[in-house]
Length: 522
Ligand code: XUL
Image (tube, rainbow, N blue to C red):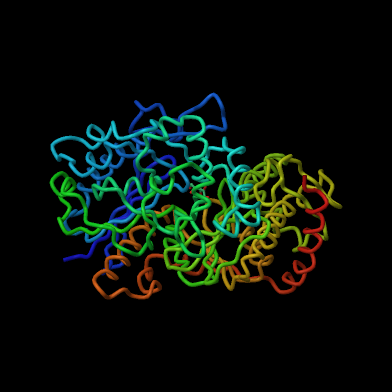
C-alpha cells in the first residue's frame, strides 16, 4: 500500500493541501481553497476583514474551519484518504485564536453527523483573530520590550525584538482593551496549533518554529519565558499549550475525521508549524548554511543555522527550524514593489528591464540607489524616500541595475549577523524566473544560485514533516536529506554562477553601499 502523507497550510488567503507518496516520490494532490471565493458570506477581502483602522487586520477563525472541511471533501475525490499515514500542517505565523471554556469539550465530542463549523462556532472568546498583517500594537511592543530590559534583551530572550505582528504584543492589546473577554479565555492557540487542535479533537501543542514568533518563547531553552509571559498579560502561562519539537507526534486524528472523510483510525498527527519554518523543509533547506531568497511582494532571506546567532540590531528573526536547528527570516519590504516602481517609471516591461541589466556592468560604475519606495523593515526606515549617489534619475539602465544591486547588497549586509556566507542560494518567488536578476544575486553573494519552483513550499514542507515525524515515531527516522530527496530539488540546469571579476567589484561596493545607507537612515 502506498505510504501517503498530508500537509495542510492555512495561509492568509487560502488553505492548501499537499499529499506526497513517499515511495514513488510523487506529489499526488495539491489543491487550494480560496477564502474569499469559497466562503463569501464572511465578507473577507484577500482573506482578511476590512477595518476602518488600517492597522487592524483580523480574520474570523470560523473561516479556517469551514475551508478545512471543503479541502478535505476535495481531497477525498482525488486521494484514497485511508492510505494517509500521518498529517501535519502549517499556518500563517503570529496570528492567534482565543478559546473559551466550551472549546475543550466541544473539540473532544465532535459529532460526524454535523459540520465542524456548526459545532465549533461557539468556542471563541474573541470572535476574530488578529493576524500577521496587524500592526496596531506599537504601544504594547514598547511596553513588553521595556519590561524585558530593552531591544537587546528582548532579542536575546525571544530571538526577535518585539514586533507589532508577533503574538505576545497582540495578546497584550487584547488583555488591555477587553479584560473581561481575556479573563474568559481558557486557551490561546496560534493559527497553526488551532487547525491541529481541530484535527486531534484536543488542544494541540505549539512547535518551536511557530512558538518563536510570539515574543514569548525562550529561544535557547525552547520553553515559555516566565518574564515575557508576565510582561504580556496576567495568567498567560496557564492559557498557553505545551511547546514541542515539530518532528514529534501529538496524537491521532479524531474519530470525527475517520467517520466523515475516511481517514484511517490510526492516522497520526504531527504538530503544525509556521509557514516559514515549514517552507524551510519544502525548499529543502535541511542542512545548516543553506539559504533561500524569495523574491515576492516583499523579498525574504531565510536559512538554516546550526548555532544560535542573534541580530544585534533586532531587525531579523530567529525561529526554531523543523530540523532541530535554528532558522532565520529577514523580511525586506521593498522587493517587487521597488523593482516594479523603477520598471514603470521608465515605461519598461520585464524583458526591457532585463535588457537594461544586460547592458550595464556589475557594480554599475559606482552608481548607487537606496530603494526605499515604502517604509523599510530592514534596515528600519520609517520615512520612505529614494536616494541616489552619482546616479542621474534620467539614466534608465543605471537605475534599473541600481535597484537590483541595492536589494542584493542590502541582503548581503543585513544577513551578516547570521554568520553564514552561503555556498549556494535557492531563489524562489515570482521574480526568480528572471535570469538577469539571478545573475546579480550570484555576483553579489559570490555563490551559485539555483532556480526553484515552489509555489506551495509550506504545505509540501508540512507533508514532508508529517512523514519525518511518523517514521521517527515508528523508530526509524531517516536523515532529513533522505526525506526531502526527489521533492525539493532545484530546477535541473538552472544554476547561475558568479561572473569572473564581479565578486571583487561587490566586495568593495558593498562597503560603499553600507556607508551610503547609514548616512541616509531616518
Ligand atoms: C513572518 C510573517 C509572514 C507570515 C505570513 O514573520 O509575518 O511571513 O508568516 O505568511
